[in-house]
Length: 244
Image (cartoon, rainbow, N blue to C red; front, side):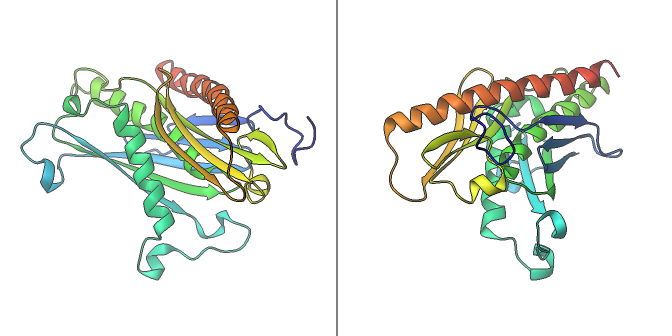
């Protein structure tokens, strides 16, 4: 039980703290801390749409994801300086966008684009899952602001969405991997779920030998437990917004 690098139990999340309203000027924002990982998310609502959605009476949610140069142990060059977005960043920002669209009634959003910027301030594993979890809180705040100002009649969210990593390290399933564990994982999963116990996305890979159905079931059980705790952290953050 105590053989993890930070002394956690196999089914224990890193300490989680979500701070809503992190950015002063964004319609919605949140900073999430999961252990040493820190991700800041900001939501911008624009009165425009991609060409393929114009005139269809629906909205759109999209995301951008990036890592600050010194979010990692050694400096990571800015992607803008390299003139292109990496394949990894593209994959992650599409994942964030899919997760948020899955729980939003885009028809109620109206003909607007909601852009979610997720920036990794410090990386110690699980940045994409932390980004999804924080982005939901930022999105909720943005929609609440649109309701408060009379732009929307109701918050167009069907359910909450959160995500967590699970992996198998030294043949043991572990919840919420830090970087040291992730770098040694034999199996690596990212699980995205709604608070209706529905899956939005499962990303699972065997880094070495293939894994069994029984192992996957154990991984999903761990993810379910962790995500329930993340929903509680999200709700606590949202409650602070409501009560000012």
